[in-house]
Image (cartoon, rainbow, N blue to C red):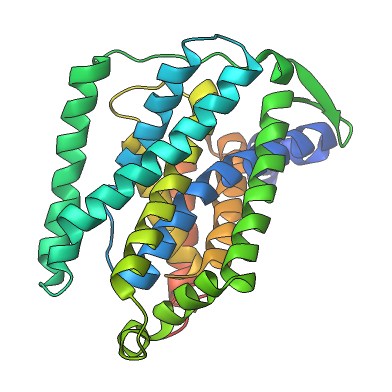
Length: 307
């Protein structure tokens, strides 16, 4: 019993400190909101086109580099930061549309292996282009002056920029829900996730729909990269961990479910935040343990449906 008591004291003694719990909860939610922007686009792309986009992580990385370039004109300026966010989203929207039309569209009727190989090749191609343009070293983006410092929330002091990420993520989630459930385009997207072949037979221009969805997914990833730029090291390897976490989120939430991506992103963010406190040397394992548990209980994910 004494050994068990020492174990819980060592690994879970922080539970008795409500300030620590609240701070880690907020940290987990802010990280989860960033992860949602990436995984929501990945989930949408798979739901409509059935493409497992291995290149989604480099889209996130490109968004961060675009933000780095634009923000460099006016360090710590709110206006330039807004322009950097716009550049990350709009630039990746255009890039995603070009990739879908030029590279992926000819492969829709091909075997899935060719689509996987193409997106995997894009990881190396874009990675090398990034090194040629921006170099191999890591870069930092300054937090805009209005979002520096700390804010009091739930009885704890928390970085203002992290609070901004939470609020911004909530607004994006609401906007995405409105687009998917209150617009004709969103209805077509949801119909395509159920039966894209029938949608095409009914006269819908599925080519334009596929392009729009891929571009939207790329824009969400680029926006996530631009938002993450002030709190991460912007370097050529930025995409590696991001794409792993994004796939974990999509598997947990359910393929093609944006709502599942939101819930799963928050779960993964919170598990990571508290895992660092409980098991610092094995925190990354907890995410995969959570995924394994979900797959055992619901192999199609929390909000997914069996094929």
